[in-house]
Length: 483
Image 1 (spheres, one colour):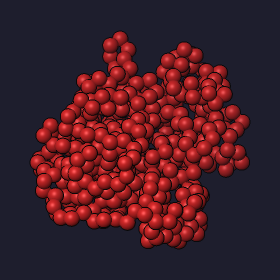
Image 2 (spheres, helix red, strand yellow):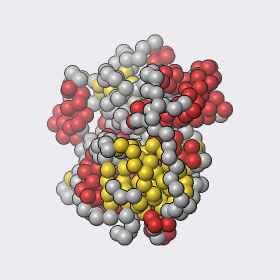
Image 3 (cartoon, helix red, strand yellow):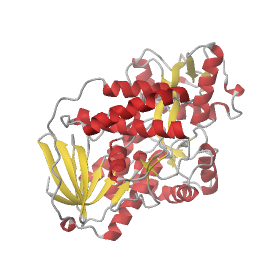
Image 4 (cartoon, one colour):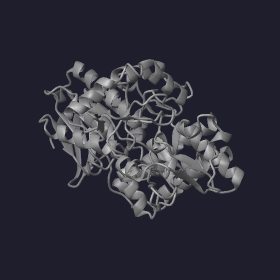
């Protein structure tokens, strides 16, 4: 690792890697990955990428309309139009890089998911994100101007003349590097909840750091709770049952093994995710039971195994053969629509600071993300951030001034802080907000945040993640209470 770089990219999911790949070859970029390269929310994405690749049977206008409907018309329309119109070009570029999307008779096989009026979602079985990550990692490793470091966390980010000084914590200890531009691509906030489909690294680090720098954080309470997480799974990480399963005909059943969505929405199982999650909670209150199921047993066994091999194997490991039995499911934290507010070029209001992917707020999703728009957003706005940086011709040599020496030694952080935050947020804001609990816990979460920021605890990964979770939870609760 050198002392200075042109660009620092924090996070190595689809957004971070695609940003790096679109930087000019003469720009030196450092990509920092908190754990291993493949451990990120991008790798867990199952359904696919939504893009209008067939303008005969589909149109940009229809994709825009579906996105706005799902988002409750709280979307940034210009951002949605940018996503839909530019997205197909980026999907084709990923295919050219080697992404192996499913085909039938040589043509891309497009699936349907909730909220879409057309089959426009291209996919690799039920592990699209993993396939895209494989493709991007291989491409990044072939670029000499891109350096990747794994098992390295961003601890502090300080503005200086001509850019930033970033304090990193890796296997060899702390190191400070000077960078002209910073792109935050740190993903979501799932670990702020007791139960989440997110990976272990989703602790909102980039959002917390951007907030500390004075960036605008917008609509952090716009959280998507996926209606179909595998309910029997143990631990905080819940296994997702893809939206595409319902797209291929699966139906939702209550505790009596009866369909119920007709009570709540005429679109039935193909209603947007927030509608389905809310419907399950209301049906749970009506029946007094949290037992719900997703049933695709009416489809042919070989079709299920071929179309959803990962889901089939994961469920079988949990004792459920989805070709013969309904899948136990319940809503679970899944995705963040709010985040670090950015413009159409992924710029924050802080000079030389960008944000892409789930940690950003482009306004594309509104209050609820349309299925399979997230990978597309990471591609489109990751490329746009790189294009904007390319125009600025960054030079690491422009970074001047002395870096701040942060105190990193101190007492061990008390145990239980993260557990307390998760418990309170799970109670106060899950699918249908509990305002009384939000009011009750708001000061407690604020106290934990202040304690972590003001006291001199030993700086390690546990501390950094707890600090981020406290910052994020404080913003969410504040928005819920004040909305």
